[in-house]
Image (cartoon, rainbow, N blue to C red; front, side, top):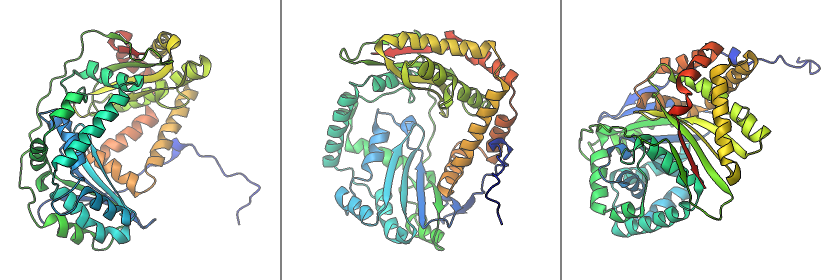
Length: 427
């Protein structure tokens, strides 16, 4: 019997042996790969279909995101309202997303309703109508949303910092505009769809409490035909053309009380050996609530409610981006303090106590991210789509547990040079 008078032993997160649950692979009759993580904890499942239909592959601005969005807005048999009502009736959620490299459709539902929902998802994926009426509604809504967002300093700052880093014509730096929305045409959207949403360019990721006939069901609706034909997707080469200037100040809202601050620089992508090491250094610098930036600029100076630093996980190239919103009168002071923290990490080794805390935080976050089949399948999806395996995952764990203060200082000296950063304030 447990003695309740004795407190349980506290175990650091770094002492846990983390294991990534295996992912099963099946293949449908037409060759579509299906990756599966099973769990019987709850009677729910997640089914995600992934295509190479992101902005990287579009020849006209916004075509990829518009095609992805409008696929759900009507087929030859049912209207957008009827499709959404059918999904809502079963308490399910069918979400779509368009990213830089990929486009996805994700179904969340109760396991018992999958049989009723797969025909709806099949209709969305295989038979979108791209009607003129739905396109006109989409254009009107998105232009109204853009007009509202352009009044917000943080939205404007996000658009400009990406443009400065990668170039305004690069997929990572390209932004939406009223003219681009007006230029969208149903024929162009349908052509993009037919080229990129094909059976041979599809990958399926499934997680949760799966019915025994899961694979036969997927075969029935997506595996028996070569739907949309077979296309070859060639990833075009896109040169990065960053801005020559490094410092920018933009006046956006004369009545605003806050300004948006962005300080960013290029960084190698996830295939570079320094990438997992930089994840640790970035966490110390601005990657969690107890970071150097938060302790200084929020807690000590009171310039902002929150400040953070993130590393982009893009396929071609990455970037480090420090972002915050601060009072207009302290935006310049905020930038000064950012550079001060960069300089400190270059000149002084991180104390062992702080490094131990960050190790525990990062390992604890990974443990949380592996809590459940939905989270685990996302880990596998990121590995598979980036042509990586579980060794990459375990290498990151080893890096977090073993990286030294000296290595972090050397990394800061290499990548935290102030002259390499782009600097932007939007007020």
